[in-house]
Amino acid sequence: MWRAEDEALLGRLEDELVLSRLFHHHVGNLAARSVPHPRAAGLIAAVRALAGGDAAVRAALDGDVTKLARLVEAPPMLARPPEMLHHIALYYGRVASVLEGVFPDAAANGWMRSLAAWLALGDERAYLAKLEDAILGGARKAKDKTGVLIPPERVPLEVVADLGKRAENTSRDLAPAGRAALLALSWVGEAGRIAGVPEDVTRRALGAAERWRNAALDAALAVVGEALDEANMRGELTTSGRAILLRAVDVWAWSGNDEAVEQFVIDRLATVGWELYRARAWDALRFTFFPFRPMIEHMARRIEHDPTKIAFAAPCAQMYVFLTDMEQSSTSKHELAERAVRLCPSHRNGRLNLASLLVDQALASMRQMVLFARKDELERVEGLLARAEKLYPQSSELPEAKAMLERVKRGRISL
Image 1 (cartoon, rainbow, N blue to C red):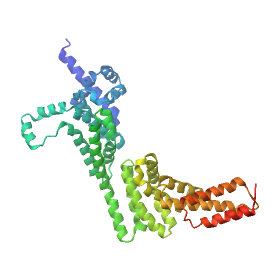
Image 2 (image 1 turned 90 degrees about the vertical axis):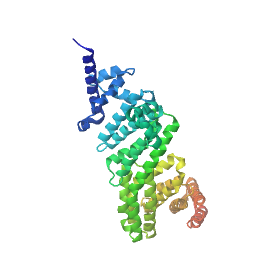
Image 3 (image 1 turned 60 degrees about the horizontal axis):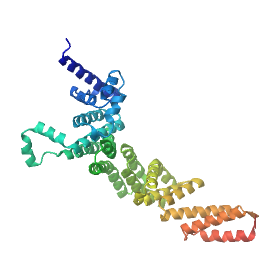
Image 4 (image 1 turned 60 degrees about the vertical axis):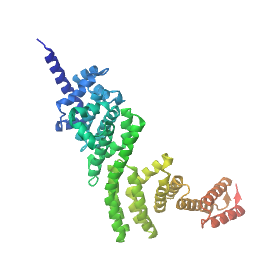
């Protein structure tokens, strides 16, 4: 005889099987390293109660877990029962902890989804408060007096803090787990969107995440900054600055191309660059800047796409001035100089460089006018000199170029 207890046991075993398949879907062959506790199958039981949930579980039993995965991840989390949210928060935390040492980007996605569930739970409040009561019992009142208990709405901030500590603790060796935590902290806004919580809830989490990210990156860059300061004191900045700064390239990759790392590098690279520029050590300048060109380009695109980054426009433009000076191709020199002025239209060195290149172009064009001067070519030269004068009226080459233009006009037949 098939009893109710037998039906319940079968359902529980099926849920555990489906959970193991879902876990394998998210972590692959790493699933064998950390099998979820059988109680985690409560997630599957919770899914069954949703619209379309039973069909998704049946599909998973037949070998297709994609519908189930989509259903578990579907926003807004706030629409889910709190018991299910708790399961989701713990489940994705387990997924992330298994992946973080091998696939940090995928782990970051796990941490982000776990945080989304915690944000929804924190906003709901009642479930976590009841859970605390059930766990602490009579000890709750005593703890309330000492302020030890964490209000439900602050639980997500504690999760953010945990991620921040994971990042900071690995900032010296730049471990993959730290990268996963840093990326997750940068996706807090997405976690808030998936959670469906009010904007002020997301803003609080974003503020905490930014503070923890900055602390971790400051710790990672402190080693570089201290080494550069020591090299500068010893007068070895031009010889060892590049090798020291290369560590920051690793930090940049570890952080997911974080803006703060770009700002740090551009600031410190300018110091090294000026030393080499004053020494007219063009080969050394070229060699020093080469590994950082992708970072400089990334920073430039960031500034071009976001006008609020204006505070960093001038330092980034100076990078392009250095690149212009060390470039050997005239076409590339002009492109780099134009980029510097686009980034920061008021940048003195950028305007000076571009004006000088425009004058050089005008002089080269006029030297090629032997007997005849085409009208359109003369107009082009006039335009080059007019723009050069507007950019940098004090340019020392301008008087010579303007005088030459007048001679060309008087002594050539215009076509």
